[in-house]
Amino acid sequence: MNTLSIKLNNKKILVNSFKIIVLIAAYGYMYIKFRNIEFKAILEYNNYLYLFFSILLMPLNWLIESKKWQFLISKFEIINLYTSFKAILSGLTTSIFTPNRVGEFVGRILYISSKNRVKAIFATIIGSYSQILITLLIGVFSVFFINDNINFIDNNNYLKWVFVILSLMLISIFFSLNKFEFVFGKIKNKHIRSIILIASDYSFFDLARVLFFSLLRYFVFFIQFYLLLKFFNIYISIFESFIATGIFYLFLMFIPTFVVSEPGVRISTAMLVFGVFVDDVSLVVYTVSLLWVINIVFPAIIGSLLFFNHKIEGIKKA
Image 1 (cartoon, rainbow, N blue to C red):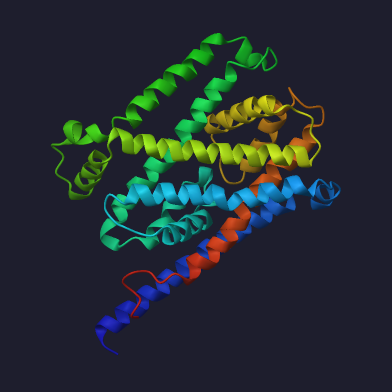
Image 2: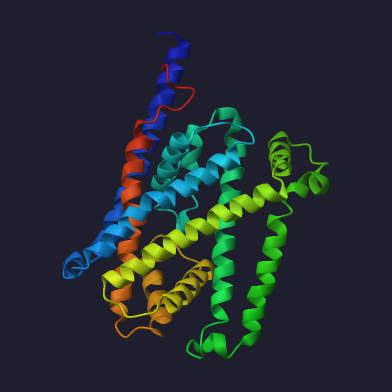
């Protein structure tokens, strides 16, 4: 066996070991979360049509994200929608056990050629930024429609305007990405330079399109959420549920969480926000948990198979 073959085999062993560690962490985290979900209570409800349509919307949710990511990376590499979809699901697997799913780029960039992976990370950040921005904007819209029920918002009107100013600032930054070359043009580092050049390739209309994809995803997600509220016989109007959902996810954006604390944070935040609108908050907890299973766990399980079986560029001939 020559030196090259030994190096390739060693690299393959390291990559497979990394994959196994990721899968153990992902499945371990899902198991811990599953232990806290009372499936017997969920099975007591028989509005299965609502549940069916909520599940049916899950592929649409991730297909929109796949289309968005495919569009973002088209500036430097062309992939088809199927490859983008596989990358998105693999990214779910590598991110499910990280705070706020910050590890999603690890699974995604495996489907990109090695020379473009730094650019792909930046494209992923832009996509995540756009989704955060939509969540923030809808959350800010929602806080102006909450009626004297969440005291620390109603008693602090300035907090609402802080959110507004923050939103305007982040929108301005988002639509200024194509000005990076003008602002940071003197930087010589080749990796940073490549990112600056990629940022400059996204026109205003490109960024608006990315934001539109993120808005579509949010509305698909909200419809799923509302259908599950109906599944659990939670009596809340569609407008009230939209406002409550907006505030719920706005709060989660600003609450620092770690993997071990995330389930508790989500539950306590759901109880705080939805307790304004519904009598039995435990049903909302079931809704949040079941939506997590539908949108994250099921796709992450599929993604784990794709992630483990994907042949990484550079070791295919090992």
